[in-house]
Structures are given as structure tokens and as C-alpha cells.
Amino acid sequence: MKKIIKKIIPHFVFERLKRLLNLIKLNKNYFNEMRRYSKYSFELTKNKTQRHLESNLIFFYHKIEKGLSLPNPRVGFGEKKVYHLLELVKVYYNRFGWDKTAQVSLNTLFAYYKFNKDHNLDLKDLYIELEELKKISTNNTTVGGVTNINLKDIESARINFKDFANSRYSLRAFLPGEIPLSKIRESVEIAQKTPSVCNRQSCKVYVFDKYRKDAILKHQNGNSGFGKDADKVLIITANLKDFRGPKERNQAYIDGGLFSMSIIYALHSLNVGTCALNLSLDYRDEEKLKEDAKIPKSEVALMMVALGNFPESFYVTDSPRRNTKDVLKVIDGSSS
Image (cartoon, rainbow, N blue to C red; front, side, top):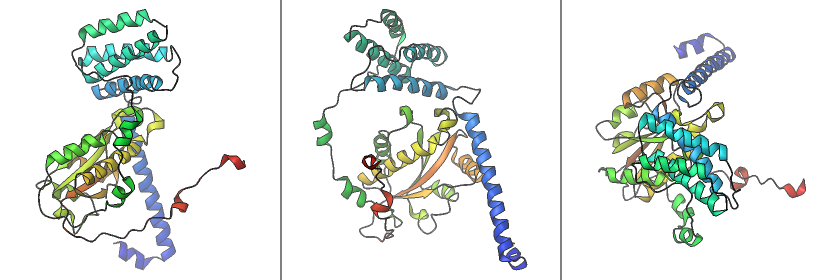
């Protein structure tokens, strides 16, 4: 049909029509994204689930953690947020019981109390409340607050990252053989260190084995000629329930992009070949993918990653990078 129309009407008219249709599609996709974000994000949804309230606890306890990690925290800082978090923990416990997130919140509040007491501010009312919560706590998680790190510990873990990053290529010539799930689990564990907004950790990884991957890859149009040879395929998503208000409408893509790159580098460090596959889909195609992959509607499907074993030698695309001077711009305030 498209070829017939091109023959009938002048080229400039066809290009205008194509642009108009693309604008209509763009508006439909933006509207659908707005509707989805409004339905699932924390401050815009009417129906708060456990995931919503869990992320809310993380949002507020991380504010306190950040304050404690400053070079010279102000004594008594953030008192309103502290008591707000205290009430949120009670609400959370009454609805969902005591779990790791509730315990980390309590540990952070205790760390706040200790910091202030060590600086001659004894918040006795807060301490009484915390002790009452401690009586009902059933989780043995000890983290929450801040941890002291020595520079020598960081230096001892350093690698030549330039060489490591330059050794990583997109692989499209997978050698037959299974990638153990243990390596994928380890890569996810490594990627969990990826920075995320207020440490909310919205990302999730779905693994599809050789019996399910072909049906999933049909939803992606850039894997022809090699996708069938991958041992497994990952889909990486981000949960919109973890984000708040209009300002964070794009945060799923930012956090998800960071996390996805961490997964790819982690797999590379474990000698697993990868090829990143984009999921730039029309909203209707994304819905079909999520239905087939059994991914909840509240999650954004960010990208696929094809996995497989390295052959002894293989071809990769040259794909030259832009010159650094074209990417890096230094804004020098001394000349202003």
C-alpha cells in the first residue's frame, strides 16, 4: 500500500503526510505514557500498594542517610522528616508486617538518634518511640544509616577500567552452550550497586531460556541472523510505582539505563557475551510484549540483552566513537 501511494502522489506531498502520521503516532504514545505514569506512580495513583509504601520508606530514610553522610551534619537536621518517617514505619507495619525495609528504616532512625546524642542533643521522645518499635521488629538486618569507608579499601579494588571497557563488544556470533543461571544471578547482584534515585532500586531482570527466548525475540526487530543462537535473553524493566510526581516522569529510563549498562559490564566480567537490543516500541507493541513475557503493566520494558558464549574468534562492528572533543565541553568560569 505504501509503495502504491508513493507512485500516485507527488514526493513532497507524501513526505508531508508521513510527517503528519508520525506526529499523530508520537502524540498517541506520549498520551499513553502519561496515562500509565499517572496510574502507577506514587503521588498520582489513588491505590497505594505495598511497593508504593516500601518505596516511600526508602525515599525518606535515604534523606536521613544523606544528611548523616555529609562532612559536617547539622545537629538536629531534618527533624520533621524524621518524625514523618517514624509515622510511615508504623503505617507500613500495620498494613504489611515487619520486613527488611521497615528494619532499615528503624536502624536509620536509631543512627540519627545516636548522632544527635553524640553531639549533646538527646531526643528522648524519639528514643522512646524507637524502643517501642524495636520490641516488634522481627528482621535481623543491621544496615541503615552510614558506614565508614577507608580510601585504601577502594584503591585495593581498582582495576584498569579503560582496558576492561574497551575489551567489551556486542557479540553476534554466539558459541553453542548454556550460560549458567548462577552467572546471571551474580551479574544482578553486582548491578545492584548501580546508583538509583534516592536508592529506590526500581529495576528488575526477567530471564528467558532457550525454550522461551524465540517467542520473546519476535517482539524485537534488531536480532535477525543471530538472536536464535543466543542461549538466553534478558528483559530489563523499571517499576513506575517507585517514582514520584511529574518531575520523575523520565526517571525510569535514567535509572534503567544505568542499571542495564551495569548488567552488561557485570556479565562481561563473568565471561558472558552480550548484545544489547533496543525496545523502542510503540505502546501497543510494548503491551503485547509484556503480556507474552508476563511483565506487570506498572513496569516499563527498557531493553533486551541477548546472552551467549564467546567463540575463540569472531567479527565485531568497527563502530568508531565520536572524538572526545566533540563530546566533552568544559564550562570554564574563570573567563566569565
